[in-house]
Image: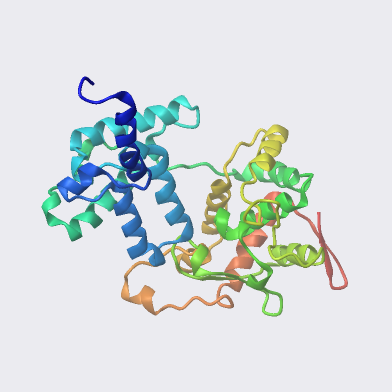
Length: 341
């Protein structure tokens, strides 16, 4: 401070601050190691086309939210001790916000960091061992088991039908009777719905597995979609004023249902409800896995079995019939019209 004035120091600092904003660190230049931000950018450029859009967003969000202070660091300055401390700190921060224990988030952030380090290591072997060496320090996250129990389904179904927003109502019905994942159903467009073949086509781009999913329409889903189509020419089956143009989160609807019935669930719990019900319907394991787009594994037999939408029509209807029975849905037939109540 006795060699340079404060004003001159600020002037000299401006270029360095500009580099930091751009993800460029002077230390990185001297060490020859890229910054974490640069590695993330390079990884997404190299592998992004093979990743689902939501995966790309998740990697960016996790690093920006929880590793923001590290983005401008040369990655070789990130040590195993720093990783351990940050892992615990992320969990504590999330827990303090009251959202959860933070264990799942902390583990996810460190898995992304490990992935990015390994990517950088491929190009720069001199980086040395990956600092994400948590071993037994990973948080033990128990598999979630939430679902709508069989005895709860009548009340739960009635609460869905009484929702004030028909978009939320029909969206939750689709999840319950197909087992689709949240985004697969929410982003469904009318181009994905084939009323002639009575099929729903989920593009590979929006599925978690990266495989397209062709589902037959069961009677209850066909009736719901026909009614929705008659409402207009929107692009999305479940339109919304959101930035994406389609429904994003039905949390408000689930809150209403919880208040009316005491049944508190997440959107993904409906997928678990569908799978559990399907397993009780005496359909083949291959059919069940195909209905929910789970991998059939690397077995030779599994690789030869092609499950078309038509092949899945009978097992899908079996599951729908069982769910209608559990929900207490009575069908009244008059001519060619079936009304569900």
